[in-house]
Length: 157
Image (cartoon, rainbow, N blue to C red):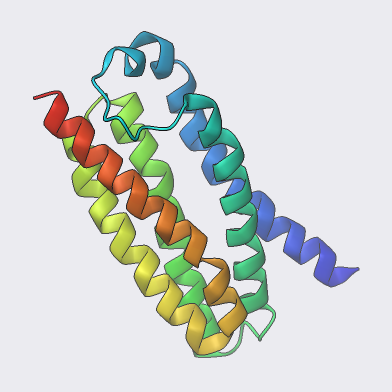
């Protein structure tokens, strides 16, 4: 039961990052984002919510698997710190892109986010290979988001 509660806390923490991002996103979509020029490969808006919900769940499970290896171990603590840092960057992207309506600065930020995710995956892999693998869909989606963000910058300047 204890492991279930800890796992749920990590999943809720990851989902909370998504909620922070969503707070800045919802109002901006009909008021601003809808009017941007977007590339042909831009997915429909409704797809983002389900995809991110799944990704945040996988992220929370991955963090739990690392944490479960023992907080007193330095590699575990480092991995969780990297996880927290990239999670904060994840929320920050939505604040910059949608809240500040700044695709260019969001592009700069998402490159930093991508690097932070890569570091998190490498740190997770040292502690728990499954945890690292659970973050692969996340970095793939952020890679797609980075390309989409770049296209939006190019199409709207």
